[in-house]
Image (cartoon, rainbow, N blue to C red; front, side, top):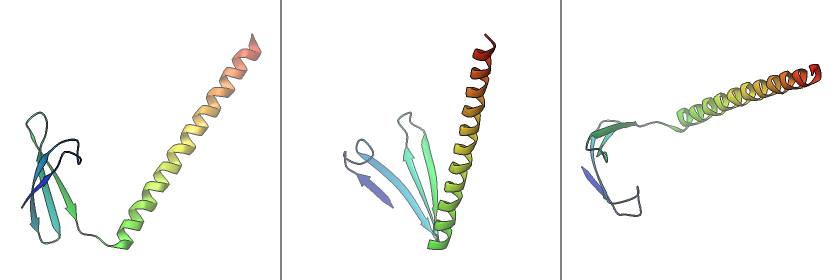
Length: 85
């Protein structure tokens, strides 16, 4: 199957070549450097989607907590260094 998008989509006219097999869609596109880039999409359901979103939220929350703790530790170190002066 061939999909062609106009200039408003993906930043210019693009032709994508795709293969549909069972519950898998593989899309191939020619990169600006001339290499073929491939991506595969698999069919899913609402439960799997919601689980993936929850996992993403959890990962973001953990990263935010780690960064906040690091920033607080750095601020304490700076305050301690200034107090020693």
